[in-house]
Length: 293
Image (cartoon, rainbow, N blue to C red; front, side):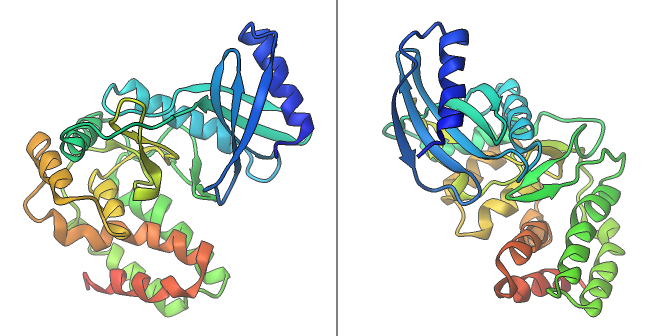
């Protein structure tokens, strides 16, 4: 259940900001969160989704997620939960979002979803990265803006995690040399495209059917990067129906050989999983590095 200290803070927010004299009427714990605890809160002012944790465990996580959700929402392309507020107590912090009740998928669900993601990726930037760092899962994600996509991929994505994995004895010095060799070939491999606004952690656990029957995207790790990153991530754990990728390609055509780079763009999330979940991901990491050598 939600800690009393945090429940009191949420109740005060409802009373003071939502003109809700009844405050909280019901709290329902929700499952599925492996990083933060989650619950549904009912009140006269509405129903809200709350995720919370100790304030010092993941500093700035909820602020970064809120900024990312707002970037996605402001693109006008995809559906995301609406940010209500972030609250801090002496011990806890929480992010309050609109509660997505879910509905029956609309006709053409996956086709619409693919087209919407393609439109999101048309939201570009002059720089790779973002003006603030955030998180990928429970790991800090470095978003230092770069003018070059190769520099961004090597300095902000692959090498920071590879070195972290080496310190934890999950990768060897030989693995890092393999990565160096791969990065030396990136100019021959990477597509010549501008950075696109990404969800950043697009696997099937981070989508749900929203109140309108369309896909709603949750738990982003937003930044401006190679758009094939989102597609590669979506394919890492089973993928979406083929009609999703077909609709994407019709809306914002991919380069003909994009699938040949899937393993390259899966390397970053594989390194994340190696660090978080251990050596069962070592073989996939090594295979992804060696595929292009």
